[in-house]
Image (tube, rainbow, N blue to C red):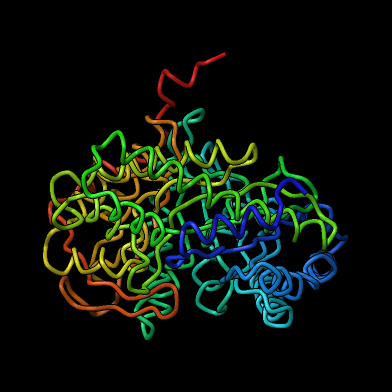
Length: 453
C-alpha cells in the first residue's frame, strides 16, 4: 500500500469535501480471447468472462467506499472494442450481444458497459462497418451500453468518410430515441486520439495494449477546486495555478488509494487514475463555477479559454506529481448538460457553440453533451465533428464529440436526459454550411508533426 489511511483522511479534512467523490471505478476487461467457433459461442464466452471478473466489483467498491468514507458514484466495465471481435458477417447477432450485456449489467449492478467501439482513423474493416451500422439500434434498445468511434489520430490523419458516416449514425440514433429527447446520442462519442485507459463513459473501452483486466479510476472534485480558489481572492494567476495544482495533488492521492485497494481485492491489475474535473448537474459541482470563481463574469465570456487553460494544466501537473500512473483524459471536462452553470451560460447567451469549440483546444475532452436542434442536417453534424477532431489531430490531444440532435425541438428550448446526464438548453447552430466540402470524403493526411521518429 503506497498511502496510509491517515494521510488520506488528513487530506479530506484539509479539503473539507466540497462535493469530492470518486466518480467511477471502471474495470477494463480484454474480451478478444473470447472468440468462439460461432458468434453465439463468442457471446457466451464474453458474458462468462465479464460475469467472472465483474461479479465482485459492486460489493468491493461499496466496502472500500464505506471503509474510507469516500463516495464512489459509479461502477463501470469497459471491454475491448467490439468491432475487433467481428468479421462483418454476424448481422443482427451484434445487437444480441448488446442486449445480453445490458441484462448482465443490471444483474451485476454495473452502471454502464463501454466498448461498443471501432477504431477507424485509417480505414474500415467489415467488422468496423457492421459495428457502426448497428449503433443506432444498440443505443436505442439498451440502457447501459455505450459506444465510441475513433475517426482520427495525429499519426494517421482524419478519416472524413468515417466522419460523414457518424453524422448519419447520430441523426438515426436521435430519431430512434426521439421520445426521450434523443438520449441515445448521449451514449456515443466520436473521438480523435482516443485513449485506451479512459474510465469515463461514454468513451471508455479497454485498449489492445492493456492488461487482461485492470481497474481505472476517475476522481472528480470541481467543488473542491472552486472552494480553494474562493479562499484566495487576492492571488495572482501564477499563485492560483499553484493552488489548483496542490489541490489536484491531494485529490489524485485519494483516487489512487481507492483504485489500488479495489484492484487488489478483486485480483486484477491497477491501471491509472484519471483526474478529470467532471461536473454533475448538482449545484456547486461545476467547472463553469470554477471559471467564474477565478473572476470571469460568466462562463463563455472573454477570459474563459485562458481560465480553462490554467485549470487544465494545473490539474495535470498536480496529478502527475501525486501518481506515476495518471492516464485517461485528466484535465477539465466541459459537458454542457452535465454542468448546471454551463447550461445557464448557454441559456443567457454567454456561451455559444463557437466559444465551446475554442475552449476545447485547452480542455481535456471536446464538444461534450451539447444539445442541438433536431433538424440540424447530417452534413452539418459531420462538419462540426470534423472541425473538432482537427483541433485534436493538429494539437496531438484527445478530443471527443457528443452532439445530441433533439427531435422536434429548436434552439432555446430545453432537453432533459435524466440522472448525471442532466438537462440542456438547445444551442444555436450556425446556418452557414460546409456540406460541399465535407462531401468530398476521403482521408486528410496526418500533419507533418506526426513524423517524430
